[in-house]
Image (tube, rainbow, N blue to C red; front, side):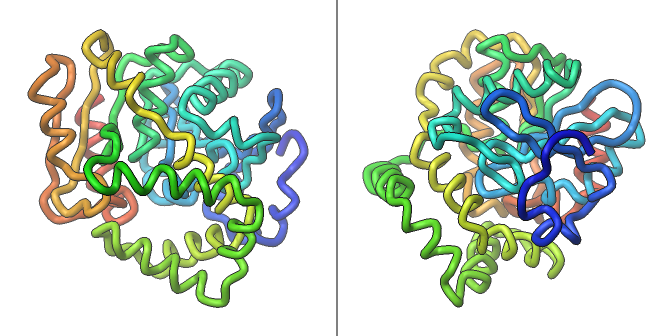
Length: 289
């Protein structure tokens, strides 16, 4: 490992999946935890809000058979530390990811982003932080909140994120592990007990909860969506019909309106499909690239 490790690495990270592939590096205001394995063209994995490198635990080794795979914990998620919550906005995260890859002298040919990770990948492209040949979005979260949720949720997330006691209270609640399980179950996915245990561990850590809340509070997709007509990189969307967090119809509509956007549907999985059936997702990704 290089660089200073996260203070919780030897405790909370003691059984972290693919731990032997983990590295730590300080780049500007971000102390990154990332995993890297395999040889070949570089493929970058970007997880979604509230996730971390554990979500790629089974898919990453499969992709590493053909690629040099890099998977970071995004700023203020998992074991990546930041100095300010402002670094959790979409523009700031994309810039940080670009700087991270530059510092590693890695130029990803393919970016695979799950949920909000797909939006970060596109932001990296439109702002010229990265120049991949193809982007793949797994259940991409590319639509702003609508209706009542659009009026209520962003202000609520902002209020919670700006209250320094909320992440501590949430992480310290006796039922926080059960709440984490209910949250994962609400995605429409059925993941194994080990997967639930990793999410439970993350949701009992104040810094991770704080990062997820800050990311939601600062999230603004409208400027990014306005640039999609100018997209010049092929963008493949893999969407699961059982996704109960991001409506598949949003991705299908994007594919109908842009010549470089292609949608691929899966019938029987949910929002965390890459954790439910990593072998199928690895095969689909390899077929696309």
